[in-house]
Image (cartoon, rainbow, N blue to C red; front, side):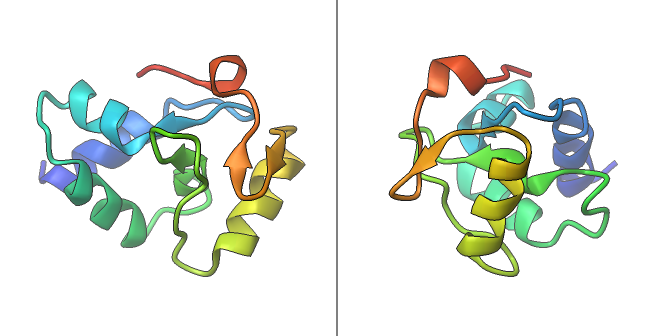
Length: 98
């Protein structure tokens, strides 16, 4: 299984209404390759079943999304996640640790 597939495996466990970070996915894979996790999310062929929109920056910024940041915000809000100025409002409330 290649790195991207491992990332998708971790991400597939993040439940609806929760978010995780690129860093936490990398740590779950015993690596510090945070940027590589971001690249894997950008190339996710399994979306929306493997929900890459649920991955955000460690500081709460929503971050990028293959189609658009606005689309990512819409998807997260539909799942009940509070966002203001492109930031998750309460990281502790929504954070899922893989």
